[in-house]
Image (tube, rainbow, N blue to C red; front, side, top):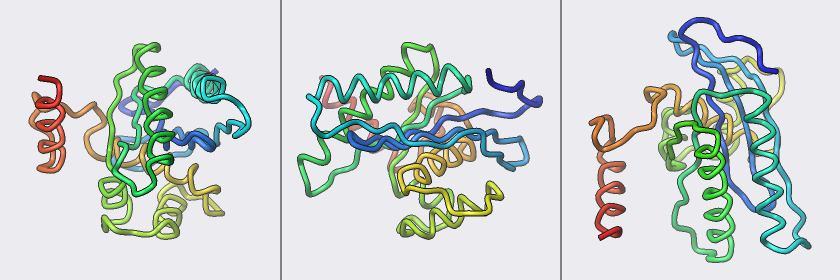
Length: 192
């Protein structure tokens, strides 16, 4: 059972979607932007399993973390175009599972691009993995860098979301960056 939150503290679960390794991190972020680590881990699925079993494994792992730690909101890395179509498909499928589980649990959800996350955590949208891990460790006052990188990315997603206002960002809220507005416009046009 999750510990009660201090007044004004936001508990965010960040999910770095992946079919083989899905990073999951939960942080509590106070109104002064200070953050505390609640949980970090990786949900793994066997590459030898059929896709439906792998996705069910990821869903079960995410559900277990949500049920234990009771976050206020879910932040998921937005699938970004990659050169490897096989890799982007697995990432997109895991992302869909994370968003589905958020919906099942009645939790608001938001997505953030990798560059948004890097910029929020390091101040530089093209930061490398080590820079992100180092800043996450510093912000959360960890003795060691969070490992593996999927876990550090999940924590970075959670921090990014909390620092960007903590609520799902929609076009109606007016809280979108120009890149997010362009993405939302493209998604709206694709639904027509």
